[in-house]
Amino acid sequence: FFDFSKAFSDPALARSLVQAIERECAEPLTFMEVCGTHTVAIFRSGIHSILPETVVHLSGPGCPVCVTHEQEVELFLQIAARPDAIVATFGDLMRVPGMQGQSLKTAQAEGARVEVVYAPFDALDLARANPDKQVVFLGVGFETTAPAIAATMQMAKAQGLGNFLVLSMHKLVPPALKALLDDDSARVDAFMLPGHVSLVLGLAPYQFIARDYGIPAVVAGFEPLDILAALLTLARQRNAIRQGAAAEIINDYPRAVSEHGNPKARAVMDEVFTVVDARWRGLGVIPQSGLAIAEAYADQDAMRVLGLTMPEPRTLPGCKCGDVLKGKIRPDQCPLFKKACTPANPVGPCMVSTEGSCAAYYKYHAEV
Ligand code: SF4
Image (tube, rainbow, N blue to C red; front, side, top):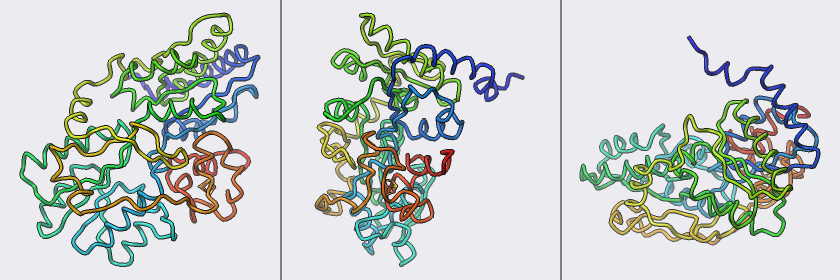
């Protein structure tokens, strides 16, 4: 029996990878990961504390809950307040505070029908069991979750389920990377690309990072050795670029990610959604970075069916999630970190989600 989990966390191999990274990083290397699972894996495995001092880890906009804008949270609360609606959501959205400190959890405590589901398909059962209500699934996430939600909408259409609606607040990773690179304050030398999202996208949508910005990027898996190996690849790439080589997008997770991704998943998404501009927490409006529901599925679009309008954008006072997501500050540089803002009493979404940078930093960082 070959134990994969142990094979990808072998301490001797990890040590030799860290030594190799150290040798390659005589010059500082600032890398950003854009995946909540990477954020947690880096902190939980202790990688964060054993990296050479020359390697700086930034945690970018990779946690779906964290990048959900304040105005979108307000919209969730508006739907929850409707007597004709049942909100179906993944559990990690429950505690994200709105502008006045309310959340789906507090709305539920006050009598709103808010149901936690583990898969979008579960919301179909909810719709079938409650024909007198509009069941609204909150579609939040990246290219990883969007195909499953699109497939659920196809299924609802095929079954003629008239009371299943989706509020699509999905976001797309490559346009956010471009926005980060276009931000004058960006100080990223290399990107660690998300394994799950890349499984759907493949490598092509990332090529602009190397071609237009001369920045290397590597698709990485989630085990400790995956992450260290990816870091070594980035360090070597960076040194090769200094010697005149061209930057590359490299797949260091070939056991899961193929060069062309998953065309079937993309086809399902393309049928159900249409690409639109979207507002990201901390990053503002990013062109062509969101997914709205396509005309052919208008009768499942919560915005249209319920006649909703997006509330005015406002910023949660005091919370620096935006700066954390851009890599401008570390979580512990937010004045509220570990004081007014803790996992038990989160002020912002980066502390709510288990994949949020602030929550991971609070839970796993050695100095906390
Ligand atoms: Fe926001 Fe809390 Fe993180 Fe500060 S510590 S950025 S308030 S989530």
